[in-house]
Every structure is written in C-alpha cells, then in structure tokens.
Image 1 (cartoon, rainbow, N blue to C red):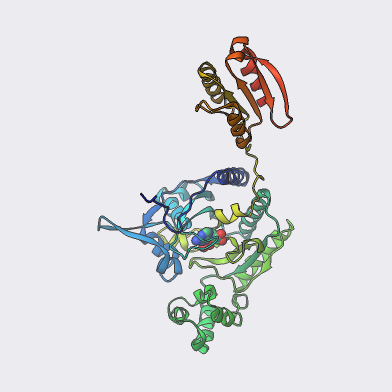
Image 2 (image 1 turned 60 degrees about the vertical axis):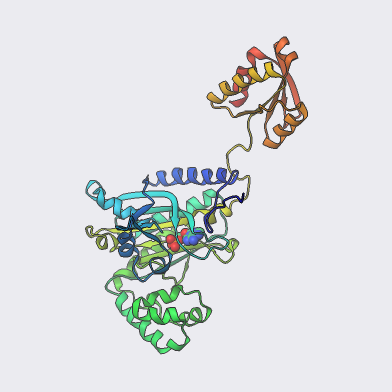
Length: 419
Ligand code: AMP
C-alpha cells in the first residue's frame, strides 16, 4: 500500500531541527520578557470577517491566500494567515486595554497562506509575533526595533539589513495615494493585469508586485517621504535618532510599503543575503487605526512578525545549547542485566538525566554502535558477570577512558557527573 504523505506546502519539523526551534523559542521568551512582554496563546481558527476587516479586502492574503471554509455550511471560518488581527481580537474581547494603558504581547505559532510553495515559502509556516498596544511615542517604535535586532543577534545572526520607512497617517497618506494613482494611470499599459486592477482598488499594492516590469515602473514612482505631514516627519526622525543611540544602523527604503493594508507611519523589514529569493526574515510596522477598525477604541499599535523557518535556516547545525545525545547509554547483555538496566535507566530518567538503552537483546558490538550513533557521553556495560560482582565498567566515550563503579554507587556517580 502507498504511504500517505504530508500536504504540499505543509512541512514536518524533525529532530535535531526541533532542538534549534526550542533554542529560538527559549531565547525569544528570555529576551522579550526582559523588555516587558507577556506571552499570549491564540486559536488557529477565526471568523473570516476578522481578517477581511483586519488585513484588508484587496490584499493578496485576503484575495488569494486564505484557507477559508464554511463550517457545516453555516459560518465562514479561516485558518489564521497572520497573528496581529487575532491579537487585537483577543485584546478587545478580554478588554485588556481597560486593565493597562500599555499592553505588550508576543505569540509563537503556525500561520496558513495558500502561496506557491518554494524554498523558504510554505503554506503552513510559523511566526514569532510581537505587538505593543497603547503608546504612539516614537521611542516605542525604536524600543521594539532595538529588541528585535537584539534578539536576532542573540540567536547568532549576522549581516542583517534593517530597512525603515514611514507610510504617513490618515492626514498625509491620501495625497500620496492620489499621486500614485496619477503616476500609475500615466503608464497603465506597462503594468500587469493585476496591477491595472489595483489602481482602482488599492494602488499601494503595486509596490509589492513581483512582476519585473511593474517593479521597474514603481522605482520611478513618487515617494511617501515627500508627502509626510510635519507630525509624521517628526515621528519618523525621532524613531531614527532613538535607534542611533544604540548604534543600530538602518537604510531608509522609501519604496517599502509592506503587504498589508493596516500600516501607518513606521514600517520596517529585516533581510539577509543568505536567504536567497525569499530574503525577508521579518516585517512589521505601526498600525494606528487597526484597533478602531476592529471595533475597539482609538488605540495605537505597533508590531512585527519573524518568519520562524527562515530564522531557523540561518542558524548552523550544532549551534544550540541543547545536548546532542544522552549522558548515559546502558548496554545490557542477558535477561537479568536487562531487568536491572530497565529499572536503573528509568530511575535516572525520573531524576532528569538523559539515559538510553536497547531492549532488543542485541550483541555488545551492535549496542556500542548504537551508543556511538546516539552520541552518548558515557556507556555502561552490564552483563551477568557485572551483576554477580556488583560492579561494572563506566566508559567515557569522549575521553576514551573507563572506570570501575560499584553498582550500588552507580546512581550517585551518574548524578555527580550530571552536575
Ligand atoms: P508578513 O506577515 O507577510 O509580514 O511576513 C513576515 C515574515 O513571515 C516574513 O518576513 C517571512 O519571514 C515570514 N513568511 C511570510 N510568509 C511566509 C511563507 N509563506 N512561508 C514562510 N515564511 C513566511
């Protein structure tokens, strides 16, 4: 019979890759906690309406990429394509804004987008999502970006390119949008079919188009920087000056508009040349009207989402703190030894020590081979003779030395080594 494989674009994360994931998650918890963030866990399924309103009807995500279905033909539900809308939904549903004027949250988990799968792009992928709700001070933006860069450096990433832009606010963006529409209408014949349609629906989306011809045209388009109102200009300058206090260098990219509709003012992306075509590690920005658009009070927000798979792919194997193999492998020969080893092995495990053994009754040679393969630090050989004499050889696999240990002191000896 044929085996059943995973769905295209949906990926298993196998060991030892999972050690790397745990290391990234632990570092995220440690760094974010120091900056005052708390973890939130959210459902994967939400009402479709949340993303239609939260992300925007005419974005690629909502138009083409969502996994949406009618639940028993009654209610339209969607597997979340991103976390910000869900975070705000929970923030409003549980009135977190009434309890605190500043709410700092992070969540780590899978997102779903029906994109064309390729290296670094999956249909189920994971994000580390971080959001600050409440303050609109530019130092909040700088602090968030600082934490993000610090986290990436702690993970061990180098050569990061931070790009920054400001998309203005409800006051100054309409004039920019008008200028873009006029510009695009002037060269409509050079745009792809999708972009021609976007002129009428959401002209800023043309900036995200992957078609080469559209990209060339956009490079000559007007820049938001020339349309920023004095308040937005000052906000953007303060973000940059606060970042420079921490020697965080960034490039201003006036063409970066990001793929989602809700951004206002500061937007940012981190890319690296090591990722190939899918070179973005993360993206984020400020969203000063999103909470209101989702039915809440007038509260500002800013956040970012890191692509977990892309981040993990940048960390070389073996660069995590997790031990590679067990501390001890017990090679048991014969029924009596197997019985003793079984109880010793599980007693040590319950004390938190990684111990392994094999119940297959295989030869000493093949058990030693297995100990080597598992990368065990120590091996204990246990046979009838050792049990009769109440002592056995404990072999240090790294130093290639061995010592005789009394079986009664074995547990204590192993505990000492583990310390
Ligand atoms: P976005 O939510 O589109 O701003 O994406 C934020 C980050 O998530 C990107 O910079 C990528 O690292 C990651 N990402 C987005 N879409 C995918 C995908 N389909 N597969 C893998 N990673 C993704």
